Length: 380
Ligand SMILES: Cc1cc2nc3c(=O)[nH]c(=O)nc-3n(C[C@H](O)[C@H](O)[C@H](O)COP(=O)(O)OP(=O)(O)OC[C@H]3O[C@@H](n4cnc5c(N)ncnc54)[C@H](O)[C@@H]3O)c2cc1C
Image (cartoon, rainbow, N blue to C red; front, side, top):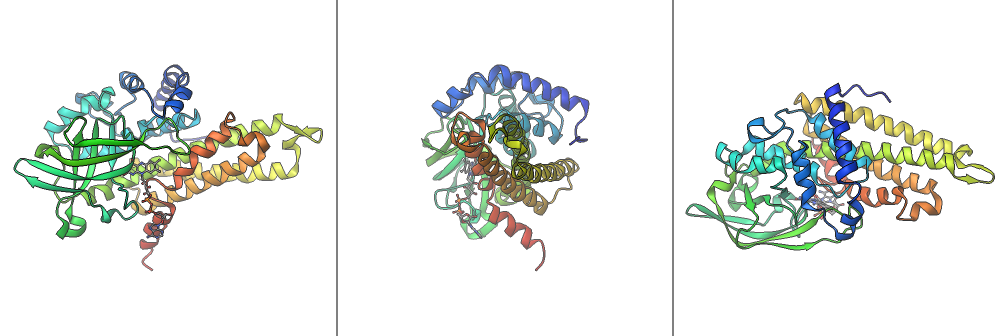
């Protein structure tokens, strides 16, 4: 399908990002999958080439353009290459809006140059061992003590958790105030009492470090409070739509890529004396998958335009997230089936896509929670 979303400058950006992936990611990704983490040097190289912080103002070393199409290019190309270990989308799409939108001038000077150079890798820590979907159940607690917050609690499933230098931590600062009792604190590498637990052993996204974090009497300086005290939950609600659309962008690209590789496979693989693509069943399955991929693509491209125009609603972002990721998981499963036994072999990219995709309907808010959000908006 011809796409009308991008301008020539985005395509140039895509070309240079592809070169970066070819040169600095492709040769190492298998090794990173073995070690369950990417080398920090790839972040610094990405920073050098301008792929981190496109939306960060130029005075802090960023690209200075608030245009999610650049983020989409990075997500699409990273996904097409199968480079699921690269945590740039979490950094650019999820954490950047908190830092750019909420940090004061002093914090921006302190954090944004490193954010853009790749020297300060970021993470966001909402989920806890006891609570994920129910964010209001967060128990991590910060108590004010003079010019510090004393932070206690633990988080889990944190993307970039091992490599992260700055972690935006969601903490309860006033338990009596319910949803108005949460704040965002930026915890920095090396703060006493901030420990990393296991780099979690996942079924897919093997090169991505996803970790447990713990905070024991961490004295976080008051100047590391992000935005206003008590506003944490509102900030999350404001920023989660972009996070969800980012996941949906990955879903659309993953569908296109799985479909392409499967069509090629069905042309090449022979059974009963002819390519398996010649069987009517194969053609019908691929026809259905091509239709669904096109439908997801149209929706996501339109929603990217709406995000840029600041008109994408919380409900629409939830629609994009659940529908595209469910379609992605279903499509990849059906594509794997068309690969026969080879689809079950890890050396085939469809097998990797299968393992990498499964989490998409879970993180960033599960399918069920997305449907709750949409349902609530229907005033039933
Ligand atoms: C690889 C990976 C990376 C992640 N990265 C991050 C990160 O960087 N930062 C971060 O903070 N978190 C991260 N997460 C956590 C992720 O967002 C949560 O796992 C997710 O929100 C679900 O929470 P949970 O695991 O506690 O599941 P639960 O909330 O325990 O849900 C279990 C099941 O119950 C269902 N359920 C729960 N409530 C309802 C309801 N009201 N109605 C119907 N069904 C319901 C859920 O849909 C799900 O099917 C990551 C997770 C993974 C696996």
